[in-house]
Image (cartoon, rainbow over all chains, first blue to last red; front, side, top):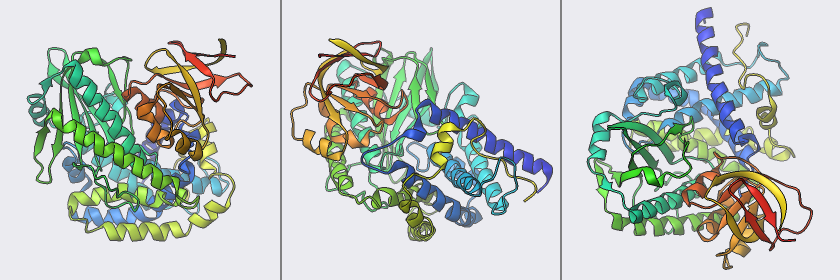
Length: 388
Length: 112
């Protein structure tokens, strides 16, 4: 690798790590614990699986479809993958790498005998190329564009905007309640990970107005072993689209949004609920569908909670294998929507987990990267040394 | 009422109710069978999944961890639930079942 290429690689690693660290510190994410799931261990296991399995699998994918084309195909309503999966790819790979650096007792910049330079380069390059083709502004991060996360073509935004209904007190309340119920569902489905919940925008709607989209995806997941519930969501994806008469949203690198205003309701001018069908058609849903969707989601979330409450301590960590495999498979779904790769991805992740699961479960403390993330004053991810 | 703590109000407004402490899954399973119309949950975990079945029924939340972007705060905001995150509690007495109040500044009060 040339010096210039190495510098560019390390610059990408640093800028991503800086943003991830800022995000995690803002919510004390490294200290996030759950009485239901072993969050640090399930993440560390998932990261190790991504580290071992993702480069080889994704190399096979890019033989068929370039990262740029992946990014372009993601530019549609309720896409899976979406922005989160690109960030998860980076933080999983780099997080596992950083754990290895810590385990080796190294300091920043020291050569790492186990470094897989070509894999690091491949993953970062994949992320960069897909992300820049995906975001409408060609940037990598929301904060590079005043906190914005524009990913839809403006023709799609116009199509959605033209189908919004004027908001009433009743519709605002019902749709907000629906969003809350769906958020609970996707959080419990994904074991306390914020997958399936994606906010993007704002999209200029003229006259000082803006459209912001809140998507719920993965609502009919059949891949993760625990996902099935008697109460099945009637739609695999939903988008709550709202036109605001003001307000200042800030989007983050994990698909979330934070508004400067504490009460948004006065700003909501019009809204609508949509789904994208298997034929890629965007269909508006009538307000009278809300109750059915909400009832199913509420029932399903309770089912999933009771299931998870019965999980063994081992499975409360082991489920991370399938949680992170679910992220990766979404890229393959863009090339082969029939789930052709599911079995191979599942097998590759289970094989990778077999090397790390038992040792991790035997230790009293979570992997050291978690205390490192909570306390480090330096870069989150150390650079690739040119001396390996 | 005496002031017992201070946190960051991340959604909703002032809230008055009865404090119900959630430390483990058994607490959640027990509370699922109760009338929670006056309940303000107290939890030390900023995760939301553990209290999933209780969320639609409660009046407010006090959490000792996290902040405005925590999962618990995100969902509380969507339910328009009063929620105080990152609370520091300086009270040695029993919290379960006591009358609780928090204001828009995140100041938390309990009946002695």
